[in-house]
Amino acid sequence: MVLGDTPYMVRGGQEDYKRVFYSDQNRALTKPISILPGYGVLPGGTVMGIVTEGRVGYYVPYAAEGPNTPGAGFQKAWPGITYVTLDLTTDKVCQIMLADSYRFAVDDHVAATDTDDTETDAGAITAIDRTTYSHIAVLTSTNNFAAATVAKGGNVYIQTAAGDPFTKAQGILFSAVDTGYGEKAKGAQATLVLSNAILYKAALLGYNSDVKTDLGNTEDGKYVILK
Image (cartoon, rainbow, N blue to C red; front, side, top):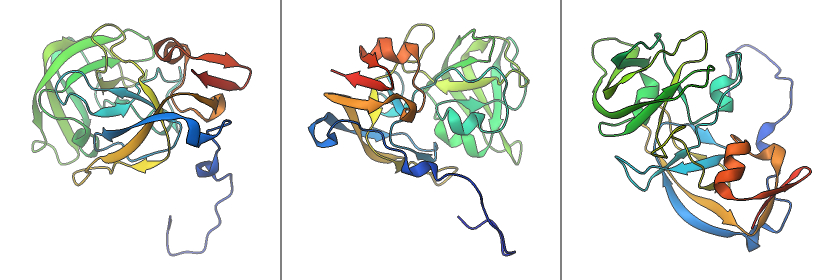
């Protein structure tokens, strides 16, 4: 990635080269999937969920609970969530960055939360306004959003489960794909790992105790075993 025309040096590790599989990846049980647009590059090992209302059957990154202190890397570390740009109140509108809005479509069912960890079912999106502001989009939902603040990492995400926390894991992304970002994003075709694999726990993006329950896997030290 070019950062500018002036000479520069970037120090640090190359995160793209992490190893996801401990076992033979060719023996894993997998399936082809389609991922919704707008989430940028998703690395192999990303936990994925399936959309059950609206654009049914498409996949999105699992909306994992973020760190307690929002800051640099929050959005990159938890790709399933989309930051709000204005505190949410008990209203049916939500403001997000314009480029992020292309992850969403009318009839998508969304939920909202912040680091207080109280999720709200906002129902289906009824309108997306991308014309009032040059850099912000306004989502209008069926139900009221509950309070969630920018200071506490307030965010919205597409629901992949009908009940609280409105997010459920379905499998692990086999390898990296680029879903695009912004208005011209098109999504991606990818491969989902379902079972018969031993993975490195540290390489799984969005993995937590809820994912372990959803997938019914076991853990052995640094390994996650998908049976």
